[in-house]
Image (cartoon, rainbow, N blue to C red):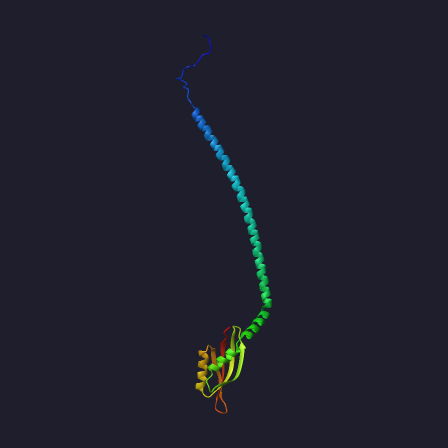
Length: 187
């Protein structure tokens, strides 16, 4: 028999079944490749989204910077116009304050505070910057007690900064006094 020689010695080179391991290795390799491709896709997708966000953020910052610049310019314009118009505004506000002032209310308060035998011989009102009315009065009264009663009544009626100035006696013996006070007018 001269034919091909079969090597049937299994002891030196045993036949091993590696198909299962090779199939598992190939499947695992394929899974790793699929996961790598999927990861690369997600990275590229997220990278594009991140680039878009950065671009949008830069645009937003540019618009915000322009808005802040416009706000500063507008504030400077308003301040400049306010300075230019300040005197006119104060004039108009003064006219409005004088127009709204209740002179009858002031005179009623003075009349209610004045004791019976006393009377006001002179009154000089002036408006102050804080909205009050400064009053300079000349009051004629019988005695110092009547003058004290008048100043006490003024204080009770809400008049502030009451000061009695110069006092003198008239020819008929009446007390002539100069009084200054401030009256906060109700609006």
